[in-house]
Image (cartoon, rainbow, N blue to C red; front, side):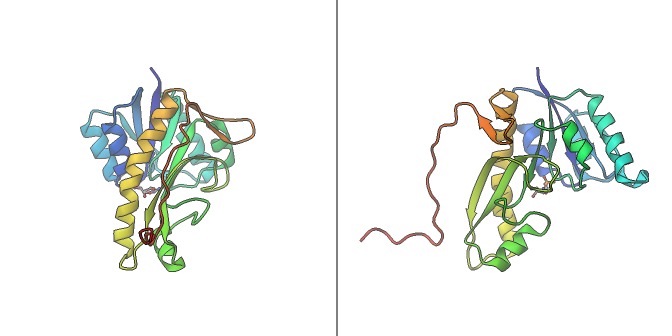
Length: 215
Ligand code: GRF
């Protein structure tokens, strides 16, 4: 059976939906770079092995990355899942796990890479916002896109309301992407694009504000 390792830094709500999901694979471990991450206790309470690789304990990024890679490899996972993991990973680390490491980002990439995505979406006045699951490449929040979900942005929105609307969608698309990978349907091609076997090419459009009914 295939297995995954999940990396977190904080709350761990995406991790939790993965723990709750019916996946064709085993969650071998949850690793955090922060000793106090609430997600660690949550994972432990579900009987999942947890560990900490504290970035503060290493002199530089390369040393931290090496320790983290070693801790991940101990479990020999097929897939590494970044779920709110808030450290930038070096090129060597990323290449080592290329095509078998994914991340979730709270925007419709390539819009709003980096931090404060919801505040920036509100300031920009976009009508559609959302989230993206992508394979991880050396450039931050820039890897080949696996799945995206869009949500409307309303005039009455503030950052917490918008963040909650996006998070609900994160919790739908991340288990889907992980399931596709574990089923062997998802791969990264040599050209750096994503291939999904059995892609159904379906989907309805979302217009915001809503279109007036046809006259
Ligand atoms: C999520 O919004 C995720 O997209 C971003 O960090 C947040 C983590 O939330 N990368 P959680 O720890 O999964 O609850």
